Image: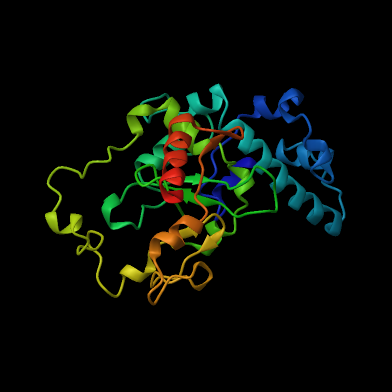
Length: 275
């Protein structure tokens, strides 16, 4: 079932969770209260489900299995075993079953997409949830260079529940692999016009530039592409600094706790705006 799930269109963001991890009931603590048909959904994931279920019941179990695997996936990708598996390279011995790419490999290949911000120079993105609770917010994409969030280009990916990745993953990932943290300086050989804000994404044309992922002006709120936001009072003679002071900023967290250096910077930014 897991191989089928990972091979399905729209599930490219997910990685393979080891069966040993799923079978250890300690790792699934509390999930039985969040998932209907928990026992049957777990049997389906581990290929132990009986085949004589009625169609309507099986359909309900399928939905529960997707939810259960997503919540297990959120826990798996921030464990030491999960992160260690993410560092697997193609030089490893071939597994007995089809090998699915790890999150590190996907990040290096920019399979999650690239940042649409010009001054990020097509920085690869990482999936991120705005909450750890299911059915609240869809998955977003985090840029390690500008430290902002964007919506996936594909509607299939944009409909994935953000809880399946959680709010911790991208920041834990970069802490474990600090060499993957991009420099804030422009890449060598970058055209000077990009720094002046007049260059588009490499290879982009005016007709295709509008198809990049949409940037979030605030958490869970998309900003119009022309830069105006009537709710914040931007436009006309209104100061954009006052509007920026009202905008909600994305705060990176690990297990619900703010990351120290980023939190310190944002406290300074907030204090400067309040002067």
